[in-house]
Length: 311
Length: 311
Image 1 (cartoon, each protein chain N blue to C red):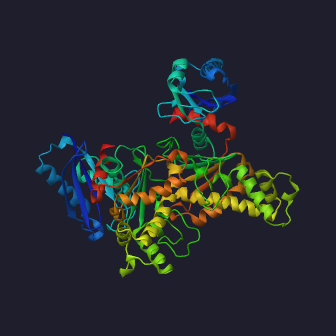
Image 2: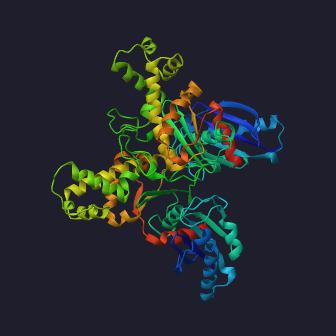
Image 3: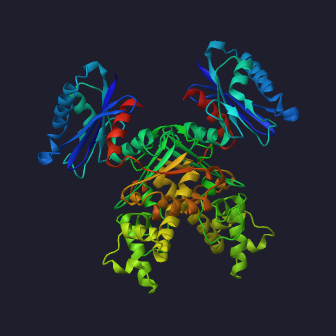
């Protein structure tokens, strides 16, 4: 039975999964990320843990097709990283070093792109080869998959959907230094900001006024309870995101748009708020583009990393 | 010397080129497109013309690597066309039929995408693998190239940059039935419309007032003569296009953006009007994205079609 490993390297822990080639997960576990001394122990630790696990499952060496790794940094096509914010690494030839440690073929890519591949393979985007994956968390992340592979771009910057400008009149500054980025309206913090603005605008009654500090979760909880002000806030969020995605779709024509990240825990109702404005503005080719929630949560990284091996 | 042929099939004529594998063009010619009887003669005519030309140049059969064809319709990955507006064809297995006629491998793609490949190979986008190509003509066409290949999309609709919404307040209708598409401001007809609106707005003197019906060419000619009103119109055009391209770049991260079509005959000055607003709104990864004018004019189609063979 051919197998592969998917490794999701984070600043705190490394998540690891042992997969059959058909996507069945045989085991998953994690180890601590030792970032001290420029993260010099990380690859060795991963390698040791993989060897132990492969031995434990009594998998013959020739049945291991390879190791896929997602790294929280831009990664070149040759599996090289120049800088990482959270791992301690500077320039590092991750693919080459890891192959020397482990003796299997190693495939390395950016962690956000890898998570999107996971959703394509085993999650909300199953059955599609052209996807836009949007992650609504503290920020707005994105990935664009064309023909089953993530678009990396000429400067490693493809998929930065959160930094599409959606409001040319905005005066507050985005984390990126510019004004009016999608991230300022569609991230968890952006939704909280829309809520604060809306609540300040007048004194329409709303259960949101009971909260000391309204969060994105509060907004969608209140929507479920039928709170009209929360509905307005969710509609404003959805209009910014849906309109932006209609424009991305005009450029890339995905088969499905997958919505993930913490905000997506609001569930299927969330999609309605995004789809309605999307269809209002979508070009005719994109009128039937599907929408789906991400399904893999924290496992998207290990799944997509495994998929790097099987592409 | 290995060779290939690039065929650009249009509704009036079929342009044809004989290329060396290194991009040197050995011959180019055209034949009439016989669209009568559902265009049944078109492929046979092309095939006959190719055979004559290959014989004329005394090229041994084994030196012909294949035939590339650009078709004015969406084309599937298998080289099938479902409908053409200008050729008379309904469902047609272009690749298979043409291979039966000619006996060489045949590669078929949409003509706009093929023209973009031509600019990548031998024109304004030379040296790049990730491009956005925008064609400013009667409408606004577009193509997105990732890793040297055109993005087709899940419904054949990728690259429809002209139908990105750039003005949510627009009340006039675009050809596509929606309002506020880029095409309404950045096509030749869109620029003429911007000019009419601007000239009506007040009576600031402008040499454009001497024209009975102002065209996009008149606007850029007047810009060159220092006409301030024409400058305002060109800036408005550039702001719509530059802002839209900054958003496309956030998604796709191209190495170069190539501007072609009739409007691009205005020359290098045109690029300034687009680049300034682009850089004002571009995400940090895209700050150094290059801009270039298309260079191949009507030859882009035959060049790109030849490139289909050599990919």
